[in-house]
Image (cartoon, rainbow, N blue to C red):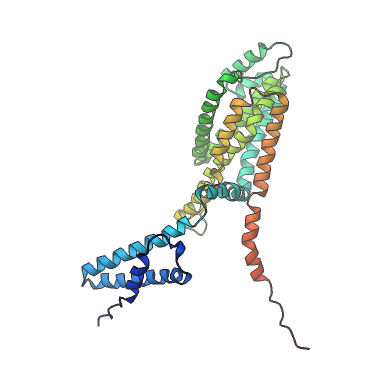
Length: 345
């Protein structure tokens, strides 16, 4: 027994709506509510016609109508949302801080290794200068010691930050590219966790040993005030992008009740939330390193270092909390017990 041929009334009504010029902004509310129902009905008609295979021309007509309705519905859905720049800001200012707070354990382990080894290296080299070549590249140690030996009395140590202000634009551009390249290396190395741990350890030892060597000339404070002017943003960003790679590894190693494919899809969103602010932050750090770190006086460097650190703390600690509260409020109100009915006296 063949099914009844579908009525053309719905198709004619859908075709009439789609023939209207312009967007749906000027439509009546009743027409807007009717459009999805007509679209679903047309999809059903199309499925029946394709199953019967009796009228190929009719199938083509209905398919074109369905495609046009589909394009209108989903085009309006996209364009009615907030603009791209607002969605990007919402992603960085709200979703990223929530992801960072959620992954505090991985971040704490990375920061603990990095800064813990930096502290150990600084204490060891500060106590015994001969340990420096075993913790830091010997050629870098020799270069630093030569620079320190050439300092005049009372001159602060600037390390390799000796380029002039006129060279800052070019230097800042190269530093930005270098920072982005290092960020990519940190992310890629985190996909092989032992390699990432080695990279963190190497950077921690280098940071501590370099400062420890400078301390033998009484210049640890001078070089630290330069390094941390941009390093507050730069180092934290590199650890953040590495943590994004670890999140993907965790999805593969411990998918839980999910399939590995599902876990990777889910955790890739979390990794993207962690990575989203990293490269803009590295560009900011490169700008500071090119223009502020080498040339600004000590008070300015301290303000930039402490100010950027405070801004990072505020962003991570409070970013996205208001939006999360708004999202939870309806659910919390729904869970509240209903008020008892009024009783007549």
